[in-house]
Image 1 (tube, rainbow, N blue to C red):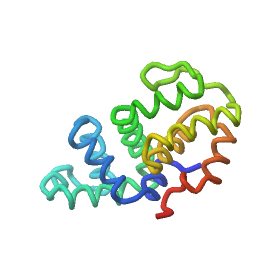
Image 2 (cartoon, rainbow, N blue to C red):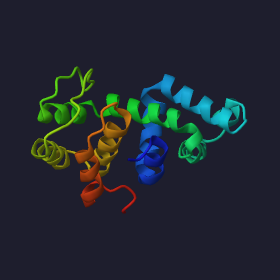
Image 3 (tube, rainbow, N blue to C red):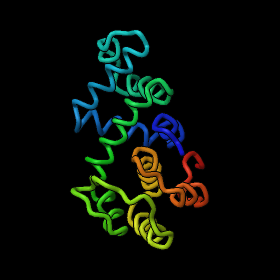
Length: 167
């Protein structure tokens, strides 16, 4: 499975930029925490990035966020983007699996999921949402939860529509 920094590194540059831009425009606390963490990792003051034009700043931030040292920060950024911007996709997936949730957030995941039910839920997402966004969500879902489903990992590796960096 891919960790958060690997996900960011493998996704298209446009999607990575979309995630960071979404945080900038809609989730100031996450954006500020991300900017501060990148500045600290690069041994710079946050004002250094703040003074740069946004495209240059975001490009530099994404380079740093794709490194292992900032995996926890990158994970928080991706998670916030999924939970806030793509709540409908999360709820569609969990509803298709028959998993009880509150606005896409689950307290207890089952330790395993039926293959047929999982494939049907993934097909539902792929029919409704961009494949790369679905791939990021499913990789994140399996990596960031306590319960990892081996059949989901197999599906992510086998289905060409769910491959990141293939374009």
